[in-house]
Image: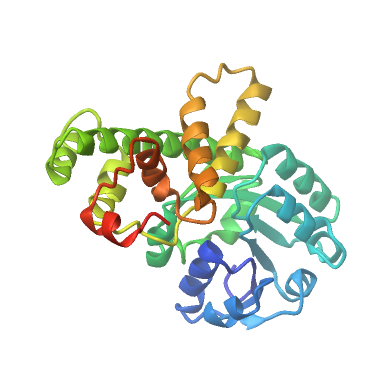
Length: 305
């Protein structure tokens, strides 16, 4: 992809960080976001619309909240599809429904363009460092052409197979993330109410069979009042869990473990934390357990939102 123009649509929480990794390497990016200040903040050159990005770029990257927004940006008037051309590559870094992804890929294929669905993992911290993991569905040769640009913000790139397989893999991964976060939140609230030292409890969990991403990377900060703001929100986590339940229902897989995350993140949303980082689910469970907070700092300054 060397020497070709890169476009980026959706320069928010994650898209902005990924774009800064590219522009920080001295590569020009043509960008568009509904919130115009995000474009300059990411170091991108402003485009007038999604269509304008598509007309000006050889490789178009998308980072959008959900399939509804992706479809509006790609299929809408002056969107990506209307302006796509033969040989162009579009990479969707959103978390989206695989069925929607396959429909969009088929529509772009009719115009001779390639659509890669590239789920991302690692959160804001990995995006900041350019160390995300990508799980990609679609044409392998197209991925090879896009690889150089993706390497600016990803340290691991896995080709998962045909169109939709990247977003399918993302939903499977995010469901495990949701289970780990909600279950660990419950355990930590129980430990606090039992009078255990939070750091000591994490020390045990992280050297025992209960270890997971949340115990290793989230709760060492949360127990000291740092909720690591900037990552996936409670509403987006709920969206991902619901997409997972739709996926497994279509596959005929028994969904025996979704009730915990649905109840946990549903509680966070119901208590006014929809737009807050999903780590605040621990405070929603704490509210249901008598107003428990893991850290004295959180309890004193109301850092539950």
